[in-house]
Image 1 (tube, rainbow, N blue to C red):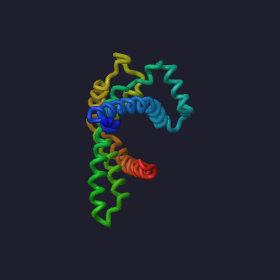
Image 2 (cartoon, rainbow, N blue to C red):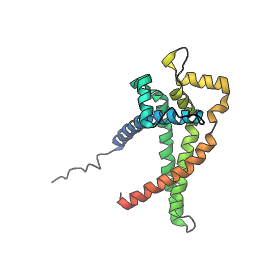
Image 3 (cartoon, one colour):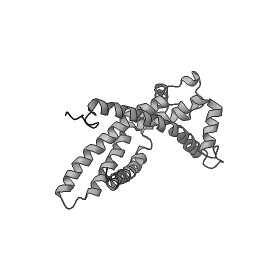
Image 4 (cartoon, rainbow, N blue to C red):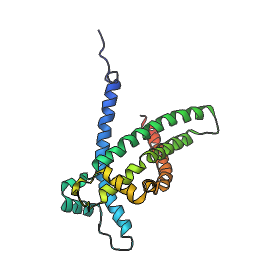
Length: 206
């Protein structure tokens, strides 16, 4: 009797690529919806630091976006969010996987470099490197999502027009303003995130 091929054996490179693309699309969509609210709330909170907040919470912010801009307000800047997420997530996991493998090979051969340090370092480098690459795009995304007065052209405010305006009014340095703080934060946050991920995998025997 010929045994049937297992489901695992049927998952070739094409199937993995399709799964990764679908997962990336879902992650981008979900992250964008949370990003539009978070950007609105944090930006206006900083601008009105010594004044009463215009949003009492996440749901209040969502209601005001829906009331003032309609359902399309939740998709403002979706394209530029995708431009940011695709290279960011690709580099993020590629860096982690390669560094994690290489550093654990070193850890297995030495007594002075524990596996926990390898995971922390690989995760930190993955988070920091992904932000370095896409930070200018994130600046453009933030402006697109928080700009209410678009002037001539109205809702046709595009990422390219925003980039041109920022470059013209503030110079190239505006695209890197605050990047040092963001990268410094990303290193420990992502290092701990991946450490927790690896520990959870071990705990669940995955």
